[in-house]
Image (cartoon, rainbow, N blue to C red; front, side):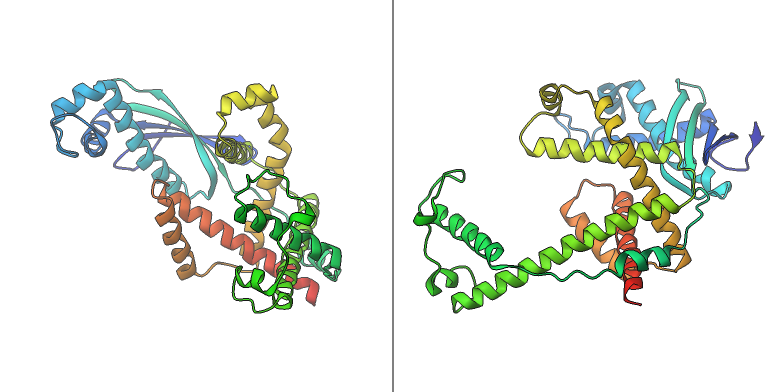
Length: 353
C-alpha cells in the first residue's frame, strides 16, 4: 500500500493490469465516511415521500426508519466514492476514458469503506497518414441525380398520406393509385407556401437531392472509418469496449420499449439472451471504441476543438428536454459529437485539395 496525502482517503494501492487498464484499491476511514452520512440524509430527504411531511422536511429519525441504516450507509458510500475516485485520478495525473468499474469490497456500520476502481486510460494510438487516406476516399465525386421515377414515387407517397388523412382511413389501409387525390395547385397550396405544382416538385426534388447527398456522405464516412481503423495501431482497453456495449444495449432496449414491447418479452420472442446479443454486438462495439480513440487523437493533432459557447448552447438545449439526465454525461455527449463532426469535416476537406 502507498500512502496518499488526501483529506478524504487514507490509502491507495495502484495495480497496472496491462492493455491500458489500471485498478485502484481505495480506503476511506470510518470518520470520513461518517461525514457523508449527513450529505446522504439531505439528498434522500429531497425525494422522500412520507405522509404527514412536506417534501424536504422529513425529520432524520423518520427518514432513517423509512430507508433503513443499510440504505443510508449505501447512499453515503456512493457519495464518498463519487468524490474519492476523481480525486485519485487527479493525484495520479491520469487521462481516463470510459466509465470506471467500481466494486465495493468492505462496507459495514462503524467500519472504513474500501472499494476497487478499475479504469481505462487513453492508450497509445499510432495513426496512419490519415490525410492521405481521407484524400483517397473523399476524392471520388458522385453526381447526385433524381430521376423522374424517383420523384414520381415520392409524390405518390405524399398524395397517399394526404388521401388517407382526408378520407380518414387507417394508416395501413390500402389506397390504390387511381383513388389518390390529384396533384393540383390547390393540393400543393395545402402543404405549404407553394403557388404551383412545379414549385412543389422543385422543392421536393431539392429535398431528395439533399437527403441523397447526406446518405452518400455517411457511406463515405463509414468506408473512411473502416480504413482508419484497419491502418491504426493501438490496444483497445476492454473497459472501453464494455462501455460501448452498455450504450448499445441501452439504446436497443429503448428502441424496443418505444415499440410498446417489454424487453424481456422481446428477448423471448427472438429466443436470445442479453449475453448473446452483446456477443453479437462485440465486434461493432470494438470498432466504435477504436474509431472514437482515432477521432480523439486526430482532434488533438489538428487542434480541432468545438467552440465553448456552441457547446454550452447545445448542453442547455438538451438539459431542457432531458431534465433527469446527468449534466456531466450531457456535457461529454455534446463535446464528443461536436468534436467528431469537426474531425470528419476536416477529413472530408482533404478530398478537395
